[in-house]
Length: 96
Image: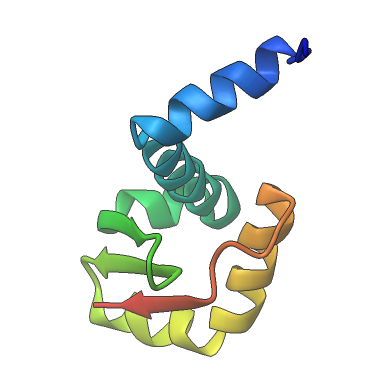
C-alpha cells in the first residue's frame, strides 16, 4: 500500500521527532511579544522566555514602574500576542 505525504507533512514529522518544533514555537512567541509591545518597551525588557509546557511567557523588565503598568494590561497583551500567533499559545504572562 502506497502512502502519499506532502513535503510539509514530512518536515513536520522531522521537526517533532527532533524537538525543533518546540524551539520554533518559543521563537515565534518571543517575537510576537516584541512586535506587540513595540521598540520602547523592548528596550526596557531584559529577557523574554516562553515555557511551552506551562504556556507561560516570562518577561524580565528593567523598570518596576513599567512592570506595574504592564500588569494592568496583561489580558490585552496576551490576547494581542495570541492574535499575532493565530492561536491561543500563551495562557499566562509573568512580569519580573
